[in-house]
Image 1 (spheres, one colour):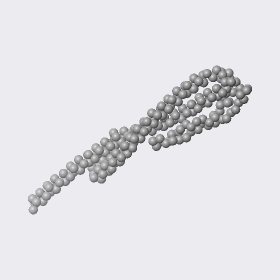
Image 2: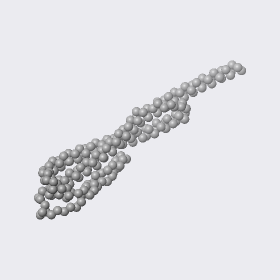
Image 3: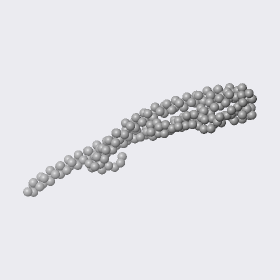
Amino acid sequence: MAKIKYTKTEQKHQQDALKQFLRFLPTLQLKKQQLQQEVRQSLEKLTANRQARRAALENLAGVLIFFSVPEEAERFTALVRVESIVTSVTNIAGITIPVFEGVKFAPVRWDLLTTPWHTDDCVAALKESLSLRAEGKILERQYQLLLAELTTTSQRVNLFEKVKIPECRENIRRIRIQLGDMETSAVARSKIAKKKSLANQ
């Protein structure tokens, strides 16, 4: 505990600090609750994405046989080219997080007469798998950012609730006792001085 001065000025300073902590604490608690909910929802989205990725890989397994031939694999990967991963940002509880919008694939055409019948299925399966993987990375980033902010906010709430507010209250109590004792002592000294003064007259 920091050393305090037993003065009325220090008492006022401690009372002001206490008021400030008590004013900010409900806002922090509300932010903590909001972040807990957002972290829960973010984890649910991440879990759903992982399940969708597993399902996409199982779906892809049906067409993977066509990728076992190197020439075929090269041809299919040439048909699926990622141009960009489209994201935006949003603000949640005061922090900026990325939001997945989609994957932009380069427009590639192929001749339906000269390509095998499974080309469409292979291309669609690859695009779905790549999109889910890109989305998963963004969802992971969202989760990490929200979790970090929740940890920081929880630490602040605990600091206010368990350290700062009790410390201010204890300081105010000690200052009041000390000031009261000093006042009582001053009154007693005054009476003694008055008695001595009267006795000397």
